[in-house]
Length: 329
Ligand SMILES: C/C(=C\COP(=O)(O)O)CCC[C@H](C)CCC[C@H](C)CCCC(C)C
Ligand SMILES: Nc1ccn([C@@H]2O[C@H](COP(=O)(O)OP(=O)(O)O)[C@@H](O)[C@H]2O)c(=O)n1
Image (cartoon, rainbow, N blue to C red):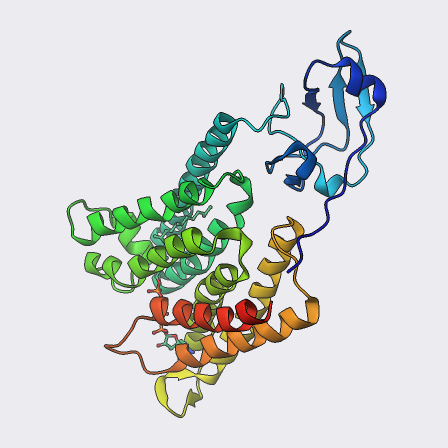
C-alpha cells in the first residue's frame, strides 16, 4: 500500500512572513480535516475551518486559501502553533481518551435506559451495544495523536471497561444497569464471557494493528458489525437453519456476510480518507469478501461449550486478513 501523496497548503506571503515563529491560527468554522502534513512534521487530527484566519505581527487578519481542505493540518483550538510538541500530543491523547471513555459509558447507560423503559428488548440492547461499541470506538481512533503512544491511550478505553466487567462479573460491585444492557439473562457472571472477550479483542487490535493496518479494521468490523447483525437477523428471520448447526440460520449467516463485508469496506474507506493507508479498490473488495466469508463460516459452526464467537470470529478474520492483505499488499 503506497503512502498517499500529501498535498500542501498555500499561506499568503504577508501572513506567513510577518507572524512570529509560528502563525497563530484562529478557527472560524470547524470541519474535520486530514491529519497528515509532512513538512510540518506533525500529524494531528483536528478541525478544519473553511477559512483560516492568521493574525500577523501587526494583528491584522489574513485569510489563507486552502488548496486541499481535506489535508490541511490544523491544531485543535486557538491560539495554536505548529509544533511537534510531545506535550501537545499528550494533551490530545489524554483528552481523546476521556472523551471516548465517556462515550462508552453513555452508550451502555443509554441502552440500559431503553431496556429499563422496555423500549427495546434486553437481547436487542445487548446486540446493539455489541455492534455500536466497537465500531464507534474504532471510528474514534483518528482523534488520537500520531505519537507512538497514541494506540496505548486508545487501548485504555477497552482496558477500563475490561476492569469494569471483571469487577461486576465477580459481583465485587453491583450495577444492574450494566448487567441488564449487556447480558442475555441478567447474570453478573455472563460479563466474564462474551463482553470480556469482546473488550480484550478491542485492546489487542488497538495495540497490535491500530489504524495503519486493514487487519484490525476488518477484524473489528466482522466481530462487531457482522457477528452482531447475525444475531439480530437470525433471531427474527432465521427459520431455515444451516445443515451442520441447528442453532444458526441461513438468514443470520448471509446477513453477517453482507453487513460485515459492507462495514469492513466502509471502515477501510474511512481510514484511507485519513491517509493512514491506501488500498486498491478491486483488490480490497476481493480480499474483504474472502475474509468476510471465512468469518461467516466460522461463526456458523457449532460453538456450544467451545470457543466464544467473540474470540473465533476476530481470530479467523485476523489470520485470513493477514494472509490476504499482508502477503499480497
Ligand atoms: C455486549 C457486548 C458484548 C457481548 O457480546 P456477545 O456475548 O453478545 O457476543 C459489548 C460489551 C461492550 C463493553 C461493555 C463496552 C465497550 C465500550 C468501548 C470499549 C468504548 C466505546 C466508545 C464509543 C465512543 C461508544
Ligand atoms: N449465523 C447466525 C447467528 C445467530 N443466529 C441467531 O442468533 C442467536 C444468537 O446467536 P449466537 O449464539 O451466535 O449469539 P452470540 O454468541 O453472538 O451472542 C442464535 O441462537 C440464532 O437464533 C442465527 O440464526 N444465525
